[in-house]
Length: 294
Image (tube, rainbow, N blue to C red; front, top):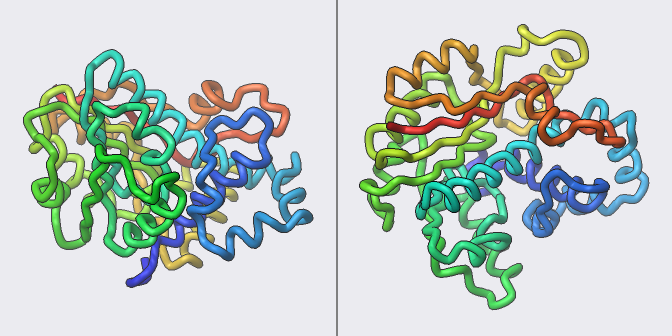
């Protein structure tokens, strides 16, 4: 990520959420703020009628739609599980690790006034995001149950950043960590998971996505994964992290996690994208994993 500006991949993800919200019939995940959260270049592209028609054609949805499925599928899955954790497990702390340009604080923070929300991200991305959120808020202010915590992941641990906030490490929390581990080494991802397990309360939960090695993929999935890797390299945020599911499961079990479920691309497609007429599917290149501590 270039110093002094928001993450380009966070802006691209917001643009994908915006396109899906604005142009898909029966969106899997709706983010009415995503269009304004992305940058002006993406907004210009999304406002181009010819490009918009091409981008949402059945042909493009069979290729580009796999990336759309990845981005909106992970958000839908995470917020489904968060809702269950609040209602069934009485979770009262929500930590968005590498929050990017997600608009949860505008969409749902007031719906859960008892939920303390901690957005963790690089200060440059947060600076851009806070400006946008305040402009989009009806009052120009943000909900009182939201706290923004800046972090440089290369220089400090997540626990160090949360220690500067109102986070209560004796209480259970729900952590979402989306669209980030792909850009970290596997060692860095495991170190953060170990850090979460060591400092947070029993019954805390983690939802994250992770890449599998593109060489394990076949046909269009392998080609698509390679294309995405070249796109993120162009954005100066290359993909460098991938796991085998077996190795990841073994590593987190040693840290004290229970693997509640690990959804493959096929599993996610079956749950959220089955029989869609627009042919949007989830890529096979990433998984979603749900972990529980204790």
